[in-house]
Length: 106
Image (cartoon, rainbow, N blue to C red; front, side, top):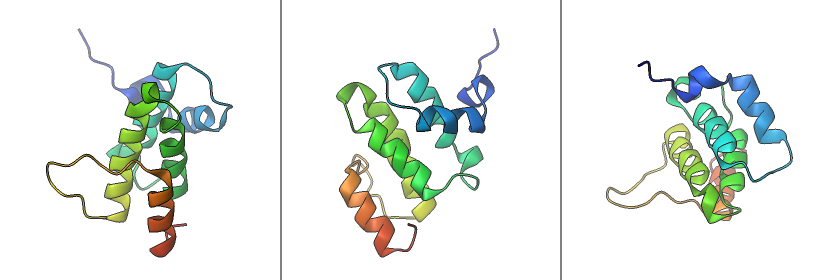
């Protein structure tokens, strides 16, 4: 049986479209889009603002928490912000907005 990755399921352009649509309750759809947008494969083609939008979408509800975690991890990679071992990534939107502005990412 072949395992299909999120990148095989939808394109980056489709993931971006999903991210710009009005929010709905389909967790899996948004999680797949976030996985594509936040993947290492697409890290150079995705902006900090797009990752921040993923983080915002994931912060609306606990059931979307996986989206916020994908986005936070991708933001750490993109910005090279220090992440202490054995801690959860920062998923607070206001904290990331401050950090991104202070360091010229947005």
